Length: 275
Image (cartoon, rainbow, N blue to C red; front, side):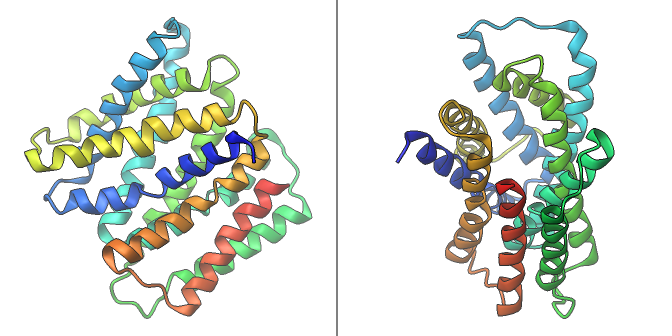
């Protein structure tokens, strides 16, 4: 087995811990903006050190684009996802996040005039049915707000990919992420409460290092020897890891109907990535 496949698996597994770290940090009564700010800021400084070692040149003419990118794909995306975790569950948040490939299909058609093929149409139908099964209307703990924000997080995640395509035409992926995180942190400053309990610091650093900085570096390294399409398929292990950890750490259990919905959502993502 190629080393690249293992690196993708490790990166996706780390991404699957995002919701777990969020829930753990919420136990310290931290608000969403503060959790996201420290995640972004610490990862930014780690990437700054990493990029500086490779030679970093700031391109002033590109900064307006990255301000736009940072607002929608860091500020909005991270806040929407983490707040969904706060008011619902890790399981629901990650499954609604994984409707992103469907949003990507729609955005690809509108922005890049990409064709909506039969495969994409089937994947879209699978994802819609999956969401309807996962979102259990009889569950009083599941609010309409949580579902709406979860679906919006999926949309901003898809937007992250669309803007990322534009970004890497001019910058290295890790350099593009540096600029994006930097602007994302700036947008988060006015909303953040910078005081955090000392006991929360290890969790904050772990959140910034493992599923943010290290996961991205591993994934980017893997793409040197693994095709993007294959890496994307392997990366669909992320929601599976999140669901397993949510069960082990917080005893979150999906009903049989919701499990079927989870299979359809993850399957639709794999189908689009495969094509």
